[in-house]
Length: 469
Image (cartoon, rainbow, N blue to C red; front, side, top):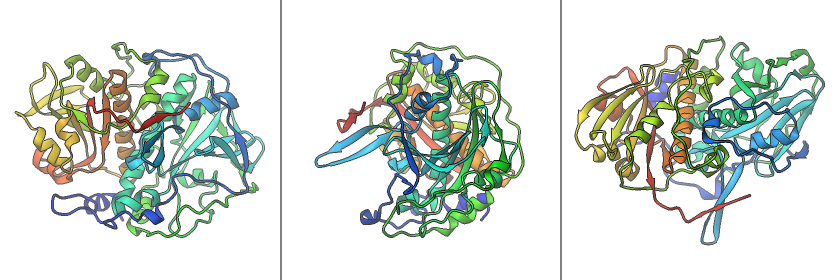
């Protein structure tokens, strides 16, 4: 299925939501953790970190050696478990990187010189799924995949959207984490995705029914010289790919996999970024604290925020040649419709923010907090926030661009999360919204897609959170 048809098919309407099971089959919820059975497990040590200031999320840092200690730090602050929620007798774990419903469809693979590894999130270790020699020179290759079943269990056919957005979150969190170690991270643009999939044997892997894993993106991570992949050395690798089944029973949504096939990039593209360094408002928190404290807001206390904080948050979403946008995976076409509810010095109303032009234009005056609530699936997040963003973009011209636009929205979402935390606020991503109300009623443009929602404000306290060391 073509991307536009998929997007139109999976729209929510006030009287009709995208197809799903319509209930949560708790007995068959897929595990959010993948574990390979015969792979050698390499425990990761407790990471050693520096107390870098907030600005160092974006600015250049001194380069650290690529070794097991620093790989541990990289993974700990990009994709690891860092807290749990406790409610009565029930508890569940949450991670550094955000995910819709805490379902985490993504898997992370690292290819080093001597082998192919999977990051086992639950046990905080690397699993060696293939042993090799001289596979990669200078740094390592980072590959992200998704298991749509984890999302479709709850969201049905709309799950592919969440997989792509969550991959965008993970791309950004990985870029911030790698930058703090002084490492560079760059999207592998010049190699066909099918060829990259073979590096982790994804095209030949055998999955349990409905547990198929799809390739999302590959990245070079390095200190100075861009890595070289020696493809010949992958030909005879023996992979250990047997894994523990994720779900007892499941439903497969064919529309997801039919569309995912269409999104494979087969050609390079160019990313245009601004070569400028932003100004910063100092934060009471250091960079690692901001990453570790990031949570999705449970709800908001309706209160005003300062104009300077609002404008500074928007400023950090501009497509500059600094983290996280310097990974060069974005098309830089995503703009914002903003419901300004409570910002001192900014008139209430609906605004259009062009990220490319860095311009904020009011398109409707007045209190639209109720409209924001309604447009975002009648959620109080839209009403009680200081402001709520709905990310939009013109329709993609090529199939693979749909994937990149959703990555871009997810990357922006991660920036918004961290910027809110840096200012002692909190954010919450919103994947449920009435697409047509945003693009056709508010924006009045049928050539745009609604991609993602995000609210920022003063958070209600979530007493369920227990931080882990």
